[in-house]
Image (cartoon, rainbow over all chains, first blue to last red; front, side):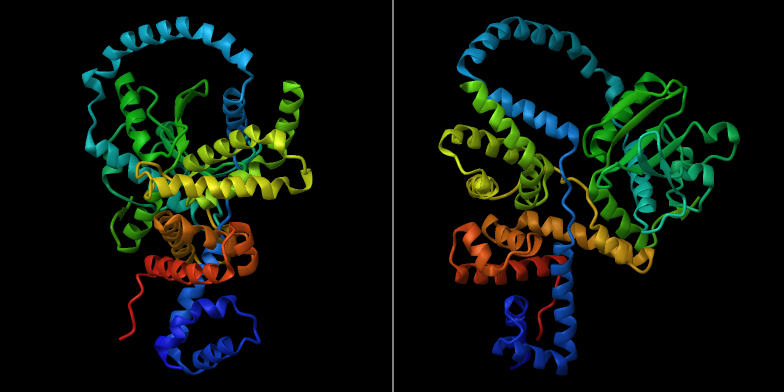
Length: 263
Length: 176
């Protein structure tokens, strides 16, 4: 068996029982051929990667939402007639709300600034990068929401590889030297209770203008995955959302190629 | 009558929705939005056919078969995935925990990303055999039964699917 034939039978090797003749031939070739062995190892690593995929279950919210939609679409004919009667006033209300909101959406304050977008992207990525370590000595369990949170690296002053722009630009910063600002500005990643979702919190300056918050929302929709929400913890506004995976992978490549600098 | 059917159906949903959503996730190339649509549609179809369904012991096989057929129908109609949809992020905890250092962990995460992106690009007939064989751990014969295709077809599709997956993930260079 030559190398080309051996590679042709990688797939067969995986599926065939140990006593299969062809499989044994492949095995013999692999034993004596370093090049094919390396190739098979790579091939096998990808299959292992696929087998190790942990597929998340739907969240309790999603389960409820899906059931609500299914129930809606499988209602009895009588129930459909009843709800049709409600559609007319609802339609009028929707039309009026759209008319009133149009001015706000077209507002010039919604213009995006690329530098802000980049700042948020880097913040998201860097936060993810830190969370991606298999052992994070700073990770703590927060009984309040039953999640693992990686400690706000602003407070810990860990050496981070982030673009310098973050320290001076954007509606928030990850660099903080004084106790006064430490608690105000943060970018906190944490893993959801199911352990499957990376959520990022961005806490802008307390005195951020409404326009800034609006811009943050817009930019977050590009960086975060979905379910973006604002909430107020009694002290400051917090923007929270799931993080899009492509930024994690981009960041990983970027960090490996040495882009960025310590702050 | 309708209420009784609804109650039984709701119980079926509670028993199987998570499992079905996971299957939909893998068959749609780990796209949470698509998986949600598929899960809903499968349950709607199941509801419509619920009167004809009697054997509770085979409910998973029944739902799985509706799901496989619906995904085929959906992705054959539109060959490629919607580009504007981002997949749910999830870690291969096993790979991550196996890593000896942060660098290796990051490599594993990158591999996961490549696998997700490769799975999204595969035609549905290749993706489904990979899912059944590698994610659900079925044998080639069981995969054939589940997907209702001959075992020989499973093997040939698996071979091509694996090659495409590896090529995408490792940007493999061919031997001279």
